[in-house]
Length: 462
Image: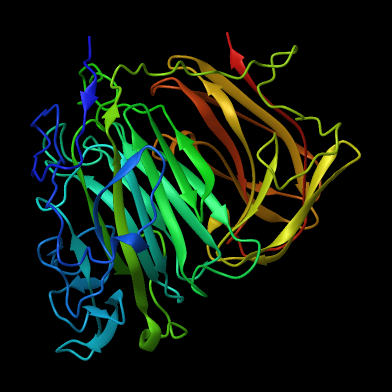
């Protein structure tokens, strides 16, 4: 039986992930010079302030932070070199500034530097509430992040087995949208929440990003608004049983702040990226902790959506019902990376109208999530489709919470002006997943011709 763990925030004790203490400021550091004017730091019911940095000094507090230099391409095909230079990381006017710079290399090519700072082995902790006020830069290829990694990454194994908590990520070319994500498992799995501002962007002013991390649940907030809750994760070594829940998130983690340039997700900078203003500003970092956490937690059972009476796993696949296409119920129409268009349901079919194809295949996308996928079963997808003129479309069944692996691989098909029936069979060979996702991807195909789809079915082949 797991024991109740008590965490006493008053002690100053640095703790590695493999140390299982019953009472400690897991990675504390005590009351430091930067922690003056504590009456200005808000209290939260049930929490005690564990550590904080208000950035009131004139330099980075090295009792809290470390520089983490890295060469370009260290991860995610990012372009920047992380340096220890005060040109890239500095404290000014009560704020930490991480600035990306564009220079030239010895061959005259573009060269980028930026900064990354961490609290590893100085302010590590297990469970708590992390609150960060920050303002992000705007610009293609800029990628600011507030995130956490385990003190001892090898305790459960290298990433993603070790776990990762992303409190905030924003893409510089889409600054009205922020993401909160956890990564874990082997195979790699992730669960991501999205928060979109009704007005303005995260680059216009400071916003507050926070996570409440407890033994059996994480809750993500922006400006006090809860937008993402996660309580189901795992970790394992390939070929072995899963580690006891709530692994890997039952060890000490530390905070990281960085501004990446380029990479797989945001794409690279272009001529529109303004490096004069490529600054990620942080007003404060505050970590709170409860006096006690109950670690007697149980992994919740997965709920699998039932098929319809006729065996179809797709809801409203005949488009007999008009429905909103901007929510997460049944069908959702999505636009990314320059894609522009609309979708509508009428007369037993859905019509997708593209005004701009965008830069990615998924720039114009119709999806239905929450498909029950069971290991060992064979599935058959069928649908009818045509287009206003000959053009291509890509179909797949993906796993958005299991590392975006494909149960049905990305399959390009050629649409004509005549209705055709398309049929694909695939075997599910991965772990049971209650969130398979059917995708129709219509971006970056060289055409914006209208597409019409009807009679969509996914069924188990007995």
